[in-house]
Amino acid sequence: MNHKPVAVITGASRGIGRAVAISLASEGFDIAAIARSIDSEGMGILNKEVEKKGVEFFPVGLDISCTGCQTEVVSNILERYGRIDILVNNAGVAPLQRNDLLEMTEESYNRVLNINLKGPIFFAQKIAKEMIWLKQKIVDYKPVIIFVTSVSSTLTSTNRSEYCVSKAGLSMASTIFADRLAKEEIRVFEVRPGIIQTDMTVKVKDKYEKMIHEGRVPQNRWGIPEDIGKAVASIARGDWDFSTGMVFEISGGLNINRL
Image: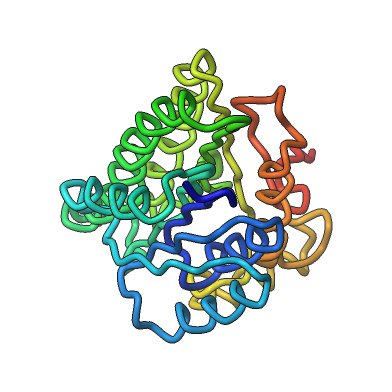
């Protein structure tokens, strides 16, 4: 049995996922880092950063939308470590093309919803079942599931409607998991990023720069992946043990309804 707690992070090779993995490594978690490819430059960078923290790095290849592939991945992690303490369901994609709602294709909708919603829901389901079993085996075991959503859960973008729908669905999934798993003593949280500097936002950098400059974000700056990493680390430390179902919006004040 592994004595260090183990964190599983999807979409770990870059952006928010990488920052979350490094933050949890700093908290003493061994890291099972999931990405579609384990041979990418991003995974190599993450490997070095995690091992600098004195914990173990385990790269895992998985397309999260392949729900039939998930059981083997969970089994491999448990075979290696004997435990999963935290799942951070972070993997997600934007549409390949930003099309108006009235031009949105079924192909794009299915791709985004499979990766952003269906995959994370069934991955969380599988890991939650293991966490229930592990609670009987591990002393002082405090499992946590975190869904990384987006302010697009509640803010519309009519040229990427499928993304908004997927994140709104994931917000509800987080709430439902929190409700169902409360009696199992598994805490569930939603972390809702705002406008964050990542590969996903680089294509629309000028648009967001203008919005920030014009005051749309009250704190008047871009978010960075490390802002999300800090929030996840706080949850992982147990700072919010009596707050299951909580939504942590990390958006610089975008949640403020201004007149």
